[in-house]
Length: 424
Image (cartoon, rainbow, N blue to C red; front, side):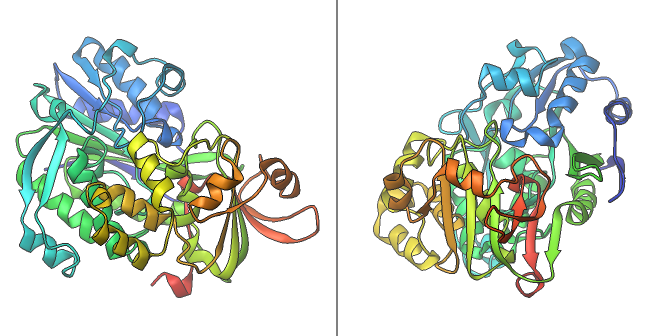
């Protein structure tokens, strides 16, 4: 097992040419390959540079890159427009959609006793390690998993083998993994590389993937000095070492420890990236550890038009709403449809303020009645955007049209904010 490439620092800013050179060096170390499968993220990770790295892969391998499968997880398949934007130089005929409900195989089960041990008894069942059939049975001599390491609400730090077992995973594996993370507690995991769920996925990789030639390419992307994004590092390998190095850098590039809890935070959801509260609630979990009690979180979502990316999950969110953890756990006990859709139940916990602070959602395409029915307060998108007139500016302190200070976040997917009292 090897780390093939590792370069980065909090002040590094890698150009496209440097990223291309890094990829070529990685490919040369891997040697000749005839049947390559690329697993980049979908459009929700547009800023990861994974799209560009996939294009570099397509150019380098040519006809030997036979399949490209965006790791959708539970998200909708990418549209032609999104494919054109994210993968402009990757042939569309090579792109395969991932169907998380039907097109998966269970490669093994992590034992119940192991799951119970690492979760402190929170999950005492075996966990099914699932992936798209093409990953295991596609006959590839290289499975190249490409993505970004960044703080994450379900597993602590995103990507690495999560891209396999969740990004190309199936209903049971995704549902249970999300619920394990939610039940264990976001604030015990976010920003940490070593978490109970990560240990479960590592067990699955070590024991069930020995015959699959997976190599990970991981980027770290953070704010640059000019207000634009900068690629701070790129790491590649087939073991945990490359992931742990990327996590260490991501914590420096994407984590902001605030001296004083925020009283008011305004988060902007890019209209090209965020169309649902399923995705948009990153505004909630990435800021919750920085918000003081009775604070207000205002979410500007001009293109938010649904709750769930999947019709069934959308229905469940509308029916049960974003409630406190004890309420959701009780609803899971009492309702079979939630027990059968544990990722939805987990999402209800993730999107809750636990009645500790106020969440004002300002969607472009959901009504006041819809927003309030799931437990949020409603704000008019035009009026709130006019008052909190920071859209288009960089993350940081601003003053609204009435002279009130607030903290503005331009893209919640790229960071994690916490007060030291809530991040130990």
